[in-house]
Amino acid sequence: MKQRTVAVVILYTSTGKLLYQDRKSIKKWGEEWCTFGGGMEEGETKEQAVVREIKEELDYDLKDFKYLTYVSAKMKRYAPPHELWHITAEIFVSKIAEDKSQFKILEGDGMEFYTVPQARNLTLNALEYQILNVAEQYLGKNL
Image (cartoon, rainbow, N blue to C red; front, side, top):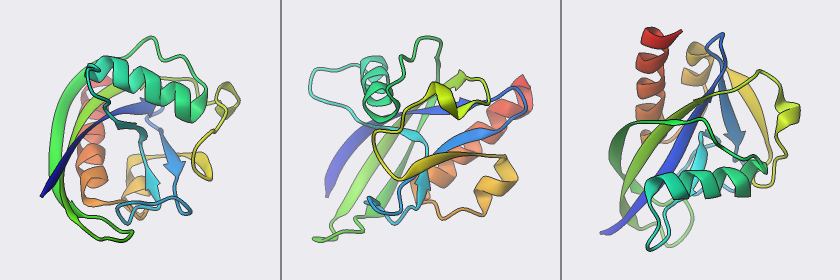
């Protein structure tokens, strides 16, 4: 089984909305929506990875962020060759303004703000549901 570690950031607003990436045309794990972030490169810290990924995906300089925890799941790759992977997600949070104009989408089909209940109705993969649970717990204590 292949393994991969990713660094993701829960981008949230003061009203508890989460910014999700539309991945319908580039889904890898069956997801249509996901948090922003991606794979850690060799020699990179999780902090370096999340900053790089947010720059690559949103052309945004992530500066004010905090590490929360990690989650992991075994998932089957959506695209051929449909291999089974063990993915670990290192999860950060960052409070942002509810204004999409601060970002420039460079990967995926777009972005949208959702509340936690709305996000539960999106097509997410197993790892993203765990990340959403972490987001809900964090927002419950910090809003």
